[in-house]
Image (cartoon, rainbow, N blue to C red; front, side, top):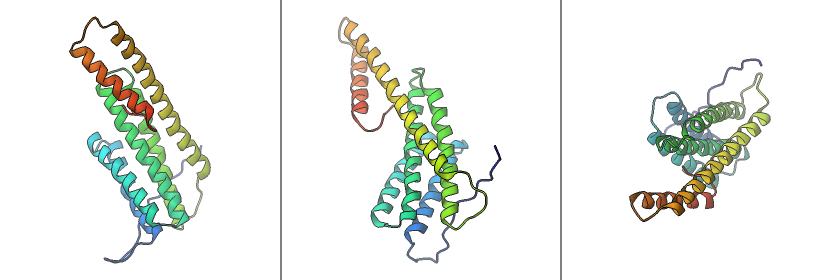
Length: 203
């Protein structure tokens, strides 16, 4: 495969106090989202900061979508939202790793690999929307593959939660009496059930 140099995010050139266009605003959000994600991926920030960044990305993209209306900006914001979801996946996988349940490390690395692909996709999309030209990868194929990878990781994480739930419920049924361990399992069982009932798996 031919190595392709990743272009930089398009940076809007505006004077202080000027009103950003929807596309400029989307590019600004995209640039900040990429910076936050790569800071974690390059070991320059921790998972607590990544959690804050993921929440910020989602809030910003939703707000920009409500006040936008530009279809090109919407395309870019859609991918930034995907990055927010992937970053949230990294946070959840990190939490599972800290619990040392055997599923955390590999899942976290998989989420990080997906995050790198989404960052690359955001950069290419921004480059194209800002008038960039030159040899570009098959953008639609990369976007679809990235979304599929993120969906597959979420599905795998849900299966891991279901397996953990089954083990905990079996242990709970065999517990001779109520105690600290039983109470802790009860809390974890309820947390997993809430996560599986929602749209996204939670670690």
